[in-house]
Figure (cartoon, one colour):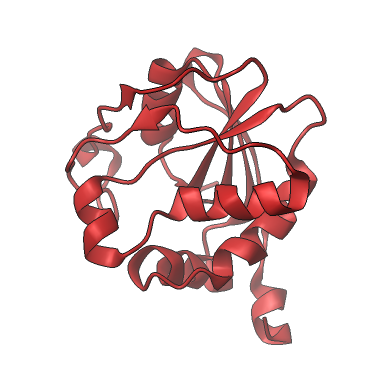
Length: 169
């Protein structure tokens, strides 16, 4: 990453969502971090996953036992050739040694959230396909309203999440 892009990075911070679910983000969803998310999500370029994982690994508490990626809708995985949360989780595994566990399955399709307001967003309907061990951590690329993390938490039972970026204050 060039020094100009690195200078644009801002901390994402922590947030407490509904139902006691907490999330922490490595970066704010602005500038270079936003562009890196787009490369990962829409261009299938995995380099940003390793950059995000480097910072995210510093935010993972020592009591975390496993990483549970929040899966992308199947149609988008095929269309863009990428599953951002899985890519990030694999890079986090390489750094931390924490296992990546498939607990959630995404539906074939759900309405895109990018560019839509809070009122238009519909939470995805995940299916549980595995069991998250105690101490698991949900992994995703972007935290906006928290709807996706909350839907994943409701199905998986995992109460903490880490994301690469966080939109909003």
